[in-house]
Image (cartoon, rainbow, N blue to C red; front, top):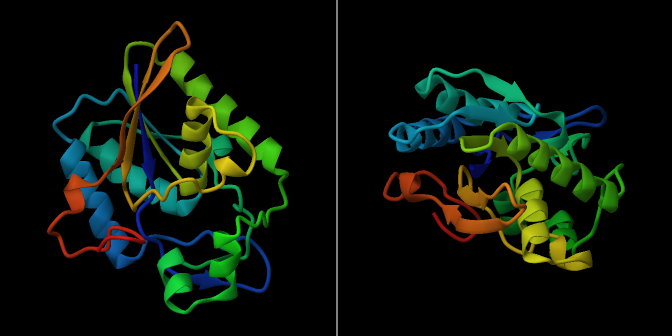
Amino acid sequence: MELLLIRHALPVRVERSSGRADPPLSDDGIAQAERLADYLATERIDAVYASPLRRALETAEPVARAHGLEVRESPDVAEWDQNSPEYVPVEELRAANDPRWQALLEGAWDSDEPEADFHARVYRAVERIVADHRGERVAISCHGGVINSYLARILGLTGEATRGFFYPNYTSIHRVAAATSGERSILTVNETAHLRGSGLPIGLFQS
């Protein structure tokens, strides 16, 4: 089967004193998600899953709609900091040289979930979806940390090497071929042809 791990589109900035931030998509994010859906409309997609966080669900919805599917929520592909009271796009942190940007560069783990538990739940969740869709093509709308975690597992990376070893762009597609024998092959990384020339933000290192 072919697995499409998709990072969510650009959300709005949310900073709260308590509670989960869980921001919706920004106007640019909505446009990114629509372009993603148009790009994937010519491919056969048999199922669309998403993290329960709004930015992932709202990214998945146009893709599912284009294929006449319903989005299936998968709680275990939520981000490592899913309960954080704030969400600030990393580009804004970098531009302001925010201390949180420095913490990201240093690989700080700021979550109420142990790192090992996060990696374990992500792997179990993705593999469960793979097992349920043999011979099919499935899209999962999720998060940068989730994509890093699963691809790092395929590459055999461990420890701190699994923390942000690459940067997934907004609505980027990361394709994995998953064989019933257990073999996993990475086919593409950071596929963002649908955003080229659109004027929409692509990610940290591209615009």
